[in-house]
Image 1 (tube, helix red, strand yellow):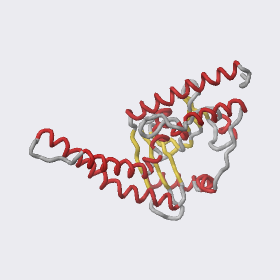
Image 2 (image 1 turned 60 degrees about the vertical axis):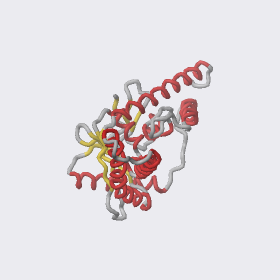
Image 3 (image 1 turned 135 degrees about the vertical axis):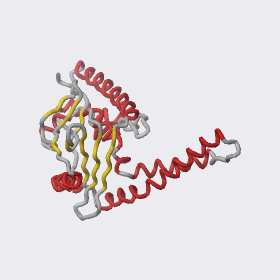
Length: 253
């Protein structure tokens, strides 16, 4: 792991990331289920184009992106006060070969990090609703699994059908995807893979005064292994394609 001391969202940071797969776009490589994303081909083309141009492709910033920058310090102050922790600004983190990177918002202590979002009010409200709905749905899913295991030892017990279990699982997966931890599962797992930290604090902050949404995310070693393998394979393919373009004189060494 290498830490690059640059300020996030500056031209220096943008140029450092150009042409490199980063955690914020890992969902263009792998899906939450660990499968190859249909966007991987287009993402590879994007990164190769940046290497040819030797600069990042310009993207239009939205008002909601500006909102995140505007209220970032307020959100950090809120997080530190409520959780009674000290955080440290971080720039850009890469693997040792500087081929894959991530930009967590803050370090938290010696072993955690924080990812802070200041979304649109309706998006934040969606996280609130999802956080309230998930426990009940998770309980039904857990009960269905328990009933299925019980039926293996108790032949007199009638378990839910496979169709019923499938419906409960689908409902649970959809509910989880609506939560902040579900929406940012790939990004945070990718960050933890690169930074080697033990966990992350996810915060959705509302400057309008809506209740905050916190989630303490621990390392999911199984998913990190799957994600790491997929991103590493993507990176190797990217480097091979870039080397071929160098030989052809399209990318200047």
